[in-house]
Image 1 (cartoon, rainbow, N blue to C red):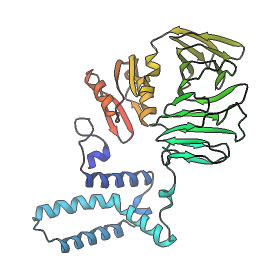
Image 2: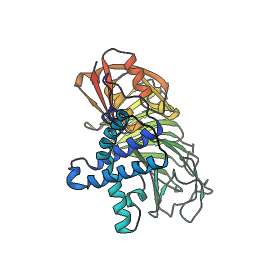
Image 3: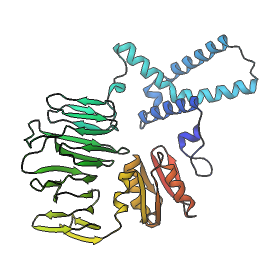
Image 4: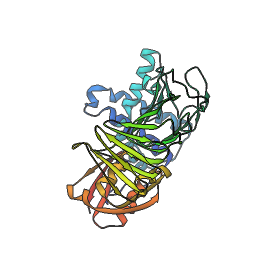
Length: 375
């Protein structure tokens, strides 16, 4: 368990699987260690009281179920208990004090986790879409939640949106999909934010994006669709394309149809198979033919990199798995790999494939921090 707290075995790899009881204790210890970061536990919490409580609980359990235990086993158990008590006693004190002194449960437990997909309506109401399902048909909503997907009521005659804009925020490690009132489908990737109305106006359909999303826009010749991404606007009639605004360059990968990129006084038309790039520093536009699967595979829950830099691969994995990478030396970022696989639930599946394909690197897991080291 101590190796799990450090996140590494002697061979530099992640430790093995814990049983359910060990995992529960480990999670408590890790949570408390985060809370105590930068503190002196002895100065902040009565550790001795927690230790006595643990001893008392052990004595009670011995009375209920007498066991024949050798001196060595008993000594070994107490050694482990003493180590865990130093980590866990603050949990007992903190939880019990909060209940007895305030008469309420721990308020932290009632807060909505920051890693949930959140929809903020035009009236300011905020919805955690992973906690709800079914139709929300109040005066402002006019939408249904299906899993992590949001589907708006189909519009009749085009009308102005009276409830203001909706904002959909997707944290690292999550993805979702929204179907707008005109039937346009948008897949939103991790770490992204999309702003849009629940009903579009009669003249134009406009949305704003920060991050990455794939658009399948319904063709309406009289009502163009515009995606705003800061200084760049993408004008669409009906098409499929991916937009990525992470980094210093904004990239638009066109799968079908035609789009026009506009940045200030500059503009450029993209045809299918082309990748358009807006360069933030120079405010310039450029385009080239490209293998678009590298930019759109995420929508189909796949990972695809064609001779990609490890630094770029790590950046995407950070967002899609809510992790943080650090490199032992800068040259490791410039190693190149080709990856073509379904996106696994755990990042270990990806990193194991990378590690086995070369004898140059190892990955050391420390919670959500992954260190890339020379082998």
